[in-house]
Amino acid sequence: MYLRLTDEQRMVQKAIRKFVEKELMPLENEVLRNEREGKPGLTPEKLKELQLKAKEAGFWGINTPEEYGGANLGHVMQAIVLMEVAKTLVPFQFGGSADNILYYANEEQKKKYLIPTINGEKKSCFAMTEPGAGSDTRNIKMTAVKDGDEWVLNGEKTFITGGNDADFVMVIAITDKERHQATNGREGVTCFIVDRDMGWRSEPIHTMGPSTPASLIFENVRVPEENILGELHYGYKLGLEWIGYARWVVGARAVGTAERLLQMAIDYAKERVTFGKPIAERQAIQWMIADSAVEIEAAKWLVLNAAFTLDEGEDNRHLASMAKLFGANMGNRVVDRVMQIHGGMGYTKEMPIERWYREARLWRIYDGTDEIQRLIIARNLIKGHVKLGQFL
Image (cartoon, rainbow, N blue to C red; front, side):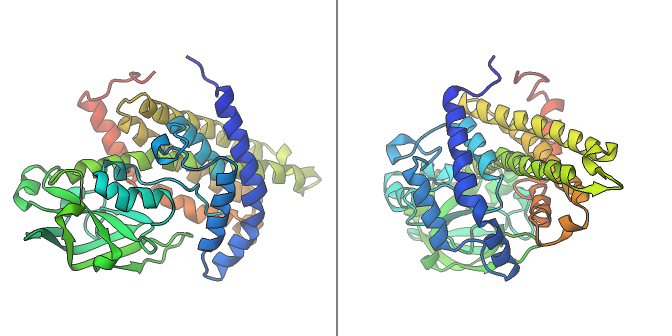
């Protein structure tokens, strides 16, 4: 067992950190100003410019297979990259990638959707959540009815990340109601690739955070048979794979953001003087810093273990739930402590703390709530699907 980054991993980490510090962090005040004015933090043109700069530096398709022009660095490296990028509030992501389930596309679908997405020519989103079906995916209502060589989709999806800008959506719909009911929602649903110009529309949902998810409305949207992604009636498996990947990613982002916040708190505590002493010398402040540091390290290892297990080709769903549950809650506790250490200044929009405070609250909700993660973890242990200590 080797509990340190390899030389290659350390080199990539340093290069990503340099890119974040040089290209992204200087934009933070501009992003905050844009968001205060109700504008996107970055324009699409600026994001593309930054992605091309990253590409010139060798960072393109971090976890995309080499056959599609990616670096294929693996999930542990992906986690490390996410932690570094999350140290800035600038809404940036490296180019050259696509949703994990889009690789299940057939050859024609890959030419039409996967490769253009990797190349940045198309934007995608994934849609499973509905107004009455969040964590309880068995309660999905959207239907797809066969009509000749087409499927007619009706229903609504909600809180869809990227739904306002997507050129196409990978959407889950019921294709066999009886089968869906008989299998508790695990069969009888299918994933369809649906272009925006096929007729669905999006409506933005304004939230307390910086992101603006969308509601997607389908009214008699006709989709050709050839646009089924994966197997007919087995789209639930794709949905689980998409969500499972997203969970440990939330933990990775929480770790990176918390590290940046904690460093801000440490720097401020050494500068801020009350009653003749820096507040860094106050035990109350020291304990908040110590507790935060311990929790960040614990979350980091949970995330890296989930990523490592996936790289080994093993089922990481249990670890992914643990990484998300602990990481998201850790992030919420750390940002709360950091705001407390900064006092009134931390509460203002002149600093990024309140912005991260609002963003962090979402981590405990999307891609499976705290309650769902606890349910999954407890059920796995009680039913014997997972043994204590088996991932060491």
